[in-house]
Image (cartoon, rainbow, N blue to C red; front, top):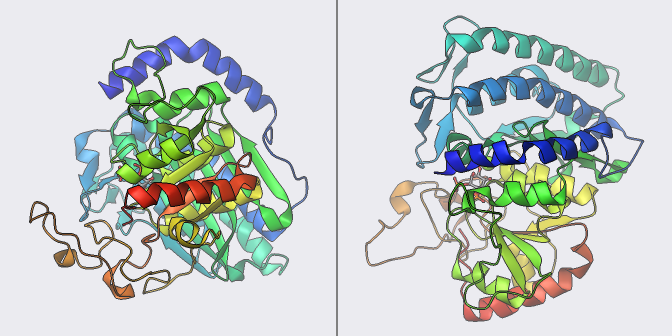
Length: 432
Ligand SMILES: O=P(O)(O)O[C@H]1[C@H](O)[C@@H](O)[C@H](OP(=O)(O)O)[C@@H](OP(=O)(O)O)[C@H]1O
Ligand SMILES: [Mg+2]
């Protein structure tokens, strides 16, 4: 049903959609400013060009994706050859750790695109992709050479940067034919702080993206109109392929007043706390896939706030945070906002052990636990176990939850903190 829904929506919506996109495409940077830039911006420009190139390949993979090109990872999340190929091409050609200080990627697949037949772990890459992979690799190598030239000239202090890469954020959506919700996320951190980022949707037509570096005064984007953004955000929530745009009020018995701003949340489970927050703000609940996509939805006005109390990783949020901050928004730990009303960032560094554990706060899950044997079996009396030590969680799990605000809402951080406080007074946050 979701695939049919999206196909039908595309067929109906294309004329208006392409008009809007064409008008957005006429001016890159439509949603942002900043003519200047420095070392970080220079690298982000190369990353954006790399994504332009990779989007061709991603589109080809997506167009013909078959079950034999995907598998499940140990934590039962989906992995496709697109995840492996995009990360491999980015890390071997452009974001090399002999140019940057360090690189952290979501995937650890073994990718062979040197000798045909090409493979990603045990998955065979279909022959129709071999030549496009070669093309992408050659183009990214040229971009990599430009990055290295910047580095060698000493003009660009790239060694200070750690890149966090999510090659396909929203792999579930990729595999469920909701590819417009997928993003390539490239975040750049320095001294643990996200300083630059690119969030890029390769499967909207044309691709949509935002990048920025606050300290270099750069915030550029090509985004969807608010109407198209809302349509994209909620397409999976439509009850049938013929339904009109859905009623976005999902807050239960008493829908928030007209004009209430959107609260972006997961397509997966939404906790009672998140629903209660919708009532407290008040806000309409807008459920959509992917952390990177939700950062772009905030910039597009589909929502004012994004709450996630479970299951993200640093590669999901590094780019999103930098991009939001460059555009005047923010992304912070939900826990610190809830407990102390303060905006506190996760620390982004290449590490072996979690840097941000708050003992007793995060539930151990198959997703975040360093050792899945520490996770209570589901159904076993609904037992919940909370992480007490940093080494009980995966190093890059965001175990403090996430709250992000659109540029238009950032000045109202206090109001959001107060509403979060009221919501958690009645419903426990389910941070994991
Ligand atoms: O696809 P990867 O790279 O693993 O990234 C995650 C996203 O960043 C999360 O935002 C997803 O949760 P939601 O899409 O439900 O917000 C999460 O979705 P899931 O828990 O439904 O699989 C993942 O898509
Ligand atoms: Mg992700």
